[in-house]
Image (cartoon, rainbow, N blue to C red; front, side):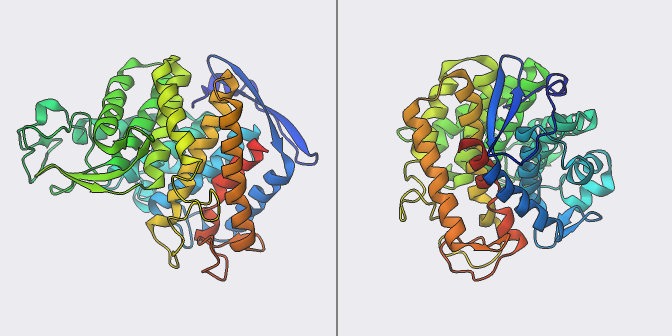
Length: 403
């Protein structure tokens, strides 16, 4: 969900963390939202961010062992802290880095924010948009729009492309698409000629498009966004649960590749949440509600109860470290923004809270080493790290809002 900066700037306040609950405000074009931020959980979140500071290199725009799209997600989490607490705590550090990335080609190359992978680019768009919301620098929004539109022009395909060998933006794809293969609205994973279509690039394209539609009011963002969501729902989603259970599709042969990865469903929830808050269309609410309900009641792990177990055997740094973070972040956004409209039932609020608490307690008991954390939440890594700490931030920031 997006808050136009012109509105948010009127409500920014310096929230202190000395009391049990700190009242904060959040606004969008339709409603005024007040949340209580729990100081105990907020302190846990800020302590984790502070320890990450020691690993950060401002010249490379990354942490020692966190780079690329994972770094974009850590930036996004830190921007969420300032968003939800109505502070500008990180404006001159991580916010300044994002502004530099938005305005410097050299910085973009260092950060990897404009590389050949569409999903990587879109993660950086989300982080830059959050920074725009917080601090109001138009360049952040402009760069996000630029990247999203370029991906739309070069990598989103439609029914008219079925039965053809796609050539867009100077990129000719290797494999013709079968005429009966539904690719209407899908987004290619990368610029490589042999790239397939996947859930994460398409759901991220939808989420960034939804945020840009919300913040600008420009209806040209909505059509491609709805097309992306439509393809996900027809081809990648389990309709009964609302869980994304197909990860990718090879266009030649129209071959589906299964995989219920948490971040695919997380970005899908994020797109639906924003579209509902902007349009008020109940179809987005119903779809998001189904996905959140399934996600928080064991779809991604239930031993211990409600704890995500997809990375239960993880012992080394890699892409899968950050998948869970995306799900927590978008469920928290759903809970707070749609909850402010009175559209989240008490039953579902209870399920979301139980889900966050179960995973928070698991992290604290099995993955905490001082203010550093391990990315394995089952005790299989015996020391904390920057990359492990980055993996827990959205659970902590969500917890400060829920409890």
